[in-house]
Image: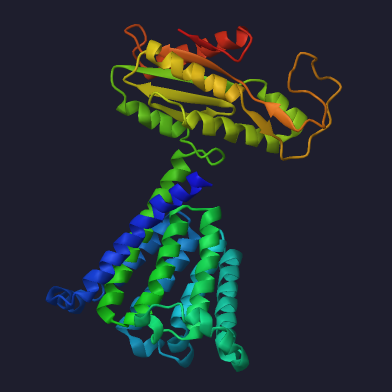
Length: 406
């Protein structure tokens, strides 16, 4: 949980700080801002449309919809008569916040005709529900909202009604709950845009809206690129860099490095005995341990149950104590099975330590390691990797749960 909060803070805080600086800059009323807003009034709209095209290229349907919502703010500022209706003027901020919250809880559905039609339907339902809530909220219940409204700072006390404040608070808490469950860059940027909407509504200045939307366009564009990069270079199951990332990382290595191949012992038996769900848990467990390796090593998932560790600017003798410590940490960890056990097959080998009764609640995991160092004889990364793989084979022949080097 602590690591998840740290990841959330590292992704969300830069966007919030940037948006806060933009709000401060907009409130400075510098003459250049007004000159910019007059001469380059269409730049924010162009920027958000560009971000939408990039999201469309990468198949990020939620970010495309979010860009459309931001484009609505630009159009509302540029051509207010075009979008000014009784409903839009009253429900712009609550409706947009509700839509962004739903986007946070939704998933990317692609751009098939049926999925896009479904997205339009739930957007209309969300707007209708927000409108009905504001229009028909019982007057006799309003006094229940006053104590919550009193928590507002004095400058905002007269700007937001009790209904607005309670609605914004509820939607923000729902969005924050989703962030605690999944904190991708796209999720964080959608949440940041939610936080800034009430500020725009409170200030109600064309220059502030333009500058904020332009900043959000850049933030959305960054989120789409980073998440798309992670999809390409990070393993979806374990969350650590993938084999493609390993091949890219090798281009940055110098003339001195160590490659370690790691393999989970008897991994097939986990899948056969307990099911693939437990096998996935084992992969996640080992990956989390490998990520914490000391000595400056970087962990990658090579494929299947195999992982690769790379130690830049290290020798084999320097790396071995860290690998041995890692092996002991993995072997000493007892994993609690959270899935239903499969019945043990009759053909199971008696020597297999993992094929026990189906009532077993904990299992131990071990790994074998093969270590290879770059040398004059083996100067290419592919050759060093092959040597590490052969050393791993030696560890398997030696009885598994050990470290061998070449």
